[in-house]
Image (cartoon, rainbow, N blue to C red; front, side):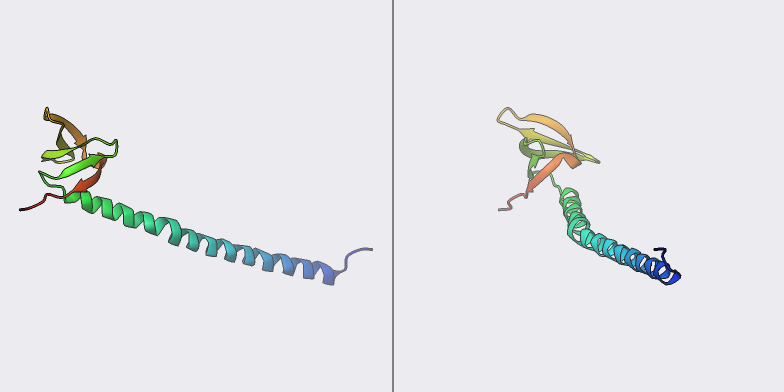
Length: 106
């Protein structure tokens, strides 16, 4: 049995409709992905940038590597922290700071 012209046209119409449906699902998927992944990441980046710009001498910090100390000098993109009782000084990039405990003012 050979396909008639009506069946061929009907098949092409169904294929065209399913392509738009697939594109629609992909668009919805991308919007959901943007809302669930990229927006929260932007918020975290903004919060981290604000934390790093608010660094002050005397703040207690913890680096992303787990080293804790007190900031003794800030110069451009570098931070010098003082650790331990021996007052060892170590230079870090600002981006290596993971947490900041603000100075307690008396």
